[in-house]
Image 1 (cartoon, rainbow, N blue to C red):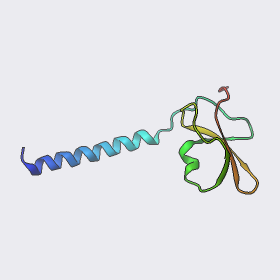
Image 2: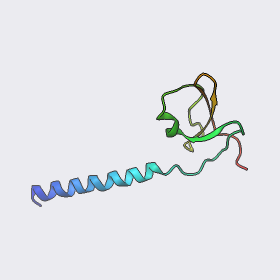
Image 3: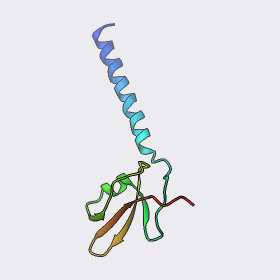
Image 4: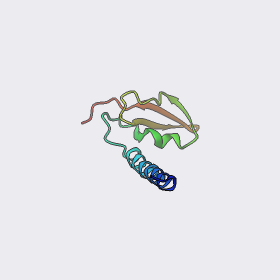
Length: 87
């Protein structure tokens, strides 16, 4: 195989793999737990885009990609993992 064809196949493979990885990351899946009524269920990456002060633990302990968030006064957000059983 000549060098030009090899580079073309390599770049094409890279391009296809980027689209495959993006589509996998875009799917949030289903949460395994829920939030108490005062909280909103959010995908972990949804809250990372905003610069805000938060309290609590924004770590996704159950690994489902979701956390619970509650808006508080003074631009604070309270974060907890979604650990309540699904109803």
